[in-house]
Image (cartoon, rainbow, N blue to C red; front, side):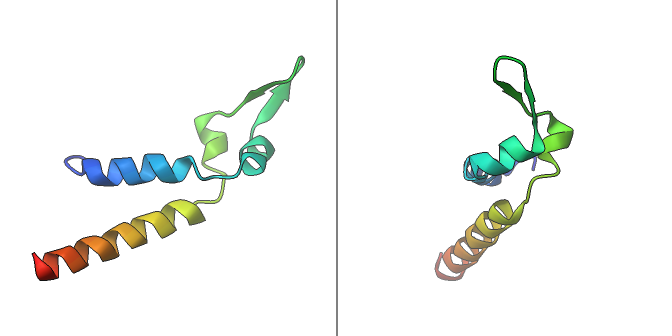
Length: 68
């Protein structure tokens, strides 16, 4: 990812598209309603939305390269 800030932005935006139910299902809840999601728990969440976003970004980049 070094030197590819465009992909970092895509990943960040795609992480925000993971449904809340998915995140809650992978994390844990403490007394009082505090939800917590550790990185290893996030790794268990589906990456489908992130893969789709990266594929779309790659396709757009390839199109721009063809006409650029």
